[in-house]
Structures are given as C-alpha cells and as structure tokens.
Amino acid sequence: MFSNPVIPGFHPDPSVCRVGADYYLVTSSFEWFPGVPIFHSRDLVHWRQLGHVLDRPSQLDLDGVRPSGGIYAPTIRHHDGVFYMITTLMDEPGNFLVTATDPAGPWSDPIWFPEAGGFDPSLFFDDDGRAWMCGTREKAAKGYDGDTEIWLRELDLASMKLVGEEHVIWEPVQRGGIWAEGPHVYLVDGRYYLLTSEGGTAEDHAVMVARADAITGPYTNNPRNPILTHRHLGLRHPITSTGHPDLVRTQNGDWWSVLLATRPYGGHPDSPLTMAAVRADSGYNLGRETFLTSVRWEDGWPVYDLVEPEMPAPALAPRRWPARPACDHFDGVRLAPEWNHLRTPRTPYWSLADSRLTLRLRPESLTERANPSLVARRQQHIDFAAHTVLEFRPRGDESAGLALIQNDAYQLRLERSTRGLDLIRRAAGEDTLLATAAADAGRVHLAVEAHGQDYQFRYALEPDEWRDLGAPADGRILGSTTAGGFIGTMIALYATSNGAPSANTASFDWFEYRAV
Image (cartoon, rainbow, N blue to C red; front, side, top):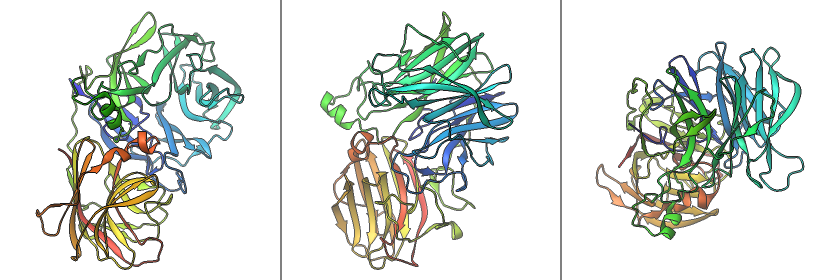
C-alpha cells in the first residue's frame, strides 16, 4: 500500500516521464524561485527532490509577477537522450522550453515560442521521429470566461521552431464547459489519445479523454467522460478537485497517473463537523498537491481508479530515499532544495556563513509585490510545528521573524521589532495586531504549531521556556478559498527595513519543521 499525496504540500500540475527504471516529475511553481521543482523516483511512490529546472535568474524573470502568476503547468518529456521541459510564464511573455541531458541540471536557457499563445503547453514525440507541441488558449471569439480550445502544431527539433499548419483539435466536452486545459497526447496501440481537464481546478475539476487515428485528428469523445472526477463525492471525501493528470507506463507494462488534488480540512466521511463547518474549514491551506492513482484499459479507453488516501502500490520494487532531517542547521554550502525565494532574487541577500542563515535587511517587505529578504518552504501537513531561533537587534522600523504566507494580502506574521514581539494577521491587505509581548534580548525562539485551522504562535526568551503569544490564530485566511489564487501556504523566515536603507542583518541558527 501507499499513502496519498505522494508529494504533499503545494505541488500542483504534476507531469511525469520514465527513462528505463527511473521516473522524473515536475510541478508548477508560480511566483516562487527557483522555478519548477524536479523529483526522482524508482517506484512512483517515494520521491526525492533533485533541485529545480529553472534555478538561474537568466532562466526566469519573476520581477513584479502577481500572486499566482509566474510558472504554470510544466510538462517533462525525454527523447533521444535529452530531457525537455516546456511551460508557461504568465502573463507575459508566454510559452518556452528548456533542455538538459541530466535531469538534475544544468538546464539550458529558455527557447521562446512567441507564436504559441495561451498556456499549459505539452510535447509529444511520435514513433516516426516527428515532435509536436500542443497547448490551451481561450477562443478568439469566446462566449464566456474559460471558453478554451486545444491547439496542436509540429515542432522542428533542429531549429526549435514551430512549423507547418496549426490544428485546433479539441474544446470542452460538456456543453458550456469551462477551461479545457492541461492537454497531453499519447500513442497507445496505434491510436492517439488526448487527455485534458475541465471544470476549473476546484471541486468541479474533471478529466476527459478523446482518441484519433491520426495525431491531427479528428478526435472522438469518450462517451463515458469524465473518466475521473471527485465532484460527486462532496467535501466530506478526504480528497477533492482531482484533475490535471499525466499518464506513465511502467517498465512492467502497467499504467499509472499522477494528478493534482486537494485535501479539505475536516474532509472525512465520519467528520463530526457540520457541513457548513466542513465548507468553512476546507480552505486548502496546503494548496494543490501531487497524487497517484492506477489506470487500466477497457475497450480501448483508459479507466481511472478513484483517488484514495491509501491505495495498492505499483508492482515495482520499493525504493525509499534517505529521510530529510527535520531540522536544517544551515551548515551546507547552499540552501536545501525545499527553500524558495519570493520572485527572482537579483542580489544575494542571504548567507550561510557560520552555519546560520543570515538575511540582509532591505526596504522590500512581505506586503509588496517585490523580492523581499525571505526564504520559505511549503506547509505539507494539516497538523505541523515549526521552530526557529532568531538573533536580531532591530533599529527604527525594522522587523524580522517567522511568517505564514499565502500572498501579499493574506499572512500571519510573528515579528521581532523595537516594540518587542508582535503577532500580526493580514487579511484583504489590512494588518491587525493580534497579540504582543516584551522581548528585550537580541536572541529569541519563535514557533508556530497548527492543529487544523488553529495556528498557535509561541516564543521563548530562554530555550524550552515556551509561552503562547495570544490565542490560536484563524488559519482560514491562508486558504485559497479566502485568499484566492492557486498556491499553498509557505512558511517563511524574513527580515525587512520597511522602506528605509539599512546595513543591519537578522540571523536564524536553525529551522525545524515536522508533522505533529
């Protein structure tokens, strides 16, 4: 058996490819840098992060990108010894491709396709040696928001240019359907299959499939569409919003699919909560995560199994990777791959000298659409605890601390400033002081422990002398149903001079994250 999700926390829009006995997977990263985390597995269940595909500023310009803008829906493929990753930088300049011979990198600088409008591009390498690109775009004469179509065009690998005629091969299956998107093409037993999703990426998400005898179509709708959806199961099912899948065939000939889905808070058939409470709590603070389910073929069509928290594992030899330490002592030469920056860092504002993370204070803050002095990792569990220790002597309006971020308008921040310690709730772009405490020392321990939507912040002026800072904060502001967008909660260590120049720094000796 295995447990879903296979990659917990904000890891949406997964795409997978197999090379021999090795599997490689990428996910969306939106406004966070480095872009496109890449994972490796030998059994489709246990994944280790190799790094990121877009790890250089020359590859990814996120300056000023809006929340939930940036990198959408990457696709990874392998052909003739080369790995290809194609994705979209929303809202401009569009679709691009990078290549590598080693999935751990380095990956090339982008090859742009300005003539390929829209988003969610994918690649298909046919048995005859030809390559094709497909993608999603809203119709020129759309009747409503989300009135999309799927286009296809040949890609010349020698020139890396789109060539030949463009073909519009699909649109939403359901009458008035919205956002036919996330297309992938496969060749199975002499037929071409087009896998898409529609209905939006929330609870109405659904997977559709069509097939054709030629890659350019015409494609025939599967009369049993949708072949996967959880929308009929309701919010009491522990997994909702299933969609945006990618198929992979194992070396044993079995078929599996990765896909995105969400875990609603209180989502359990035996939940004691009322339906209104389940809906209120299902804020999806974890974002859209990567799940795995089995696929079989009947009458020439793929048949998906419903996605469950526990499922029979693939018939592959289990390969567990060494567990990551719960505590990061910052004693490496570079940040661990789970750490991220908000938008593209143009200057090295962080240092790992002396086995600590030191952040240089800069004018940019967490409430701006900028690149503040911040490193962050994903919240990956509904119940978790995060601890750190901060060395900081603020001056003027400076602050540093521990924050939980959904975007620049929705946050919970535990800040050290000249006033002491403040717990600040930011909702709809407005700050509210929830609690405060005196803290005269330069060294203070900070923590947050979450149980469901109750986020209890704590501090200690001496080790293990923890004190609650206020009552548990309401974590529902960190969910996408309140804050909007497509990402999950990020846990950040940050420092800011709040608009003024500064030569000050803030240091974090270590950071620990674990499920509780």
